[in-house]
Structures are given as structure tokens and as C-alpha cells.
Image (tube, rainbow, N blue to C red; front, side):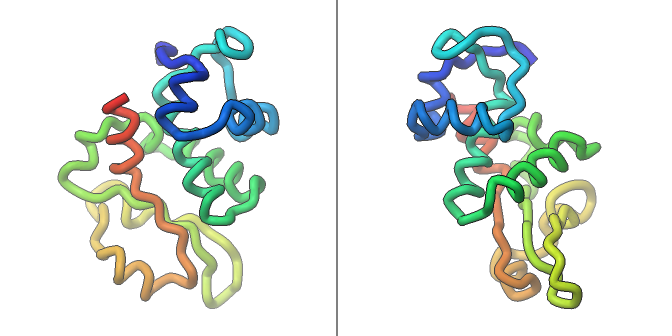
Length: 149
């Protein structure tokens, strides 16, 4: 993917401070492979989506370890949710649900309501009823922000 954003663009679009951008990159949440350093570093659309997702998850109180787990899972997911344009989400809502399984107490990511034929078969209120304290991220909204940048 061709890098097209500079650090100032990421700060403006994702509404992050320069230190947030540097911190999220330095601790490895954003896996930066594009050339450049500091303000000259170039970022791709996927990088922008990852910054938007990190900010959203961080604002919901998830630890950096949990955020890293979610990002790693998304980066390797066969449907490649971090590369789709907003048009992909126009016929259905693209939800990431991170929650705790009430039966086992283990944390998990639920993709059944995001991709494929079962995309978003539940409304947001039904998701909140079904899952224990779910963190719900609307990928369509993140994609729209990135696409209008």
C-alpha cells in the first residue's frame, strides 16, 4: 500500500497529539514499515485506520496488551478488515466486538457480526444484551473517516 499521509495528517485526522502518534508507534501498536523518521515518515491508509482503532480502543479503557492482541488478530484475519474502503460497509455494519465470555470469563473477539453472510445480523442494542460489557467498534465509521481524509 502506497504511503500517503505524514505525521501531521495522522494527528489531524485521528485527532491525536504528536506524542500519541510517537508513543503508539514506539511501543509497537502501530507496526511501521514505511521509510522515514519523525515528521518525514509516511503512513498508509491502513496505518491511519490502525491509529483510529487504537485511539477508539484506548478511549474505551483497553490496555495496550489487549489493543495489540486485537490489532494482531485483525492484521492476520482472512477478510482483511483494515484495508476495506467505506463502500464495503454500505450494505451492512462492520462491527468489531471485544468482550468477555460469560461462561468462561475469557476475553475474545467476535467477528460473526462483521464479515461474510452473517454480517451484522444483530443490532447494536441486541449485541449489548448478548455480550458482557462489550466494546463495540464500527469499522464502517473508521473507514469513512479514513476515506474522507
